[in-house]
Length: 155
Image (cartoon, rainbow, N blue to C red; front, side, top):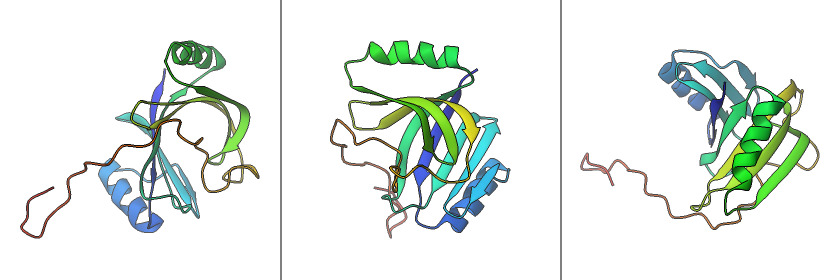
């Protein structure tokens, strides 16, 4: 069974852990000095946050699969897209060793399809730097998230 993956870059990890723990009514299943992850069953999602210097907001989305056969199936789907697919086998990222494929949607959002092989004690390998997400092939579109105004409305 597949699980939706959402990764959000945050400015204040402690405040974000408190916020999401309250929202999900659950503590993170993984907590590091710069990272936290919730493996939720309701909704079925792998939700991760990190404070590693990336701009705050959506970092990437993904589909976590449970085995190599599901990963091969997802790769076959990605190969049908009109987009570049980046393969990373045995890569170290987000305190895990994984096989994965990356694609960027038409608006510039990175999508990761991956199978976790093992947990590791570091965020990523020497090449991971502050981010595991490949550079987007498409320039990101402007954001249109509602913002609370002084008058009490949004936008």
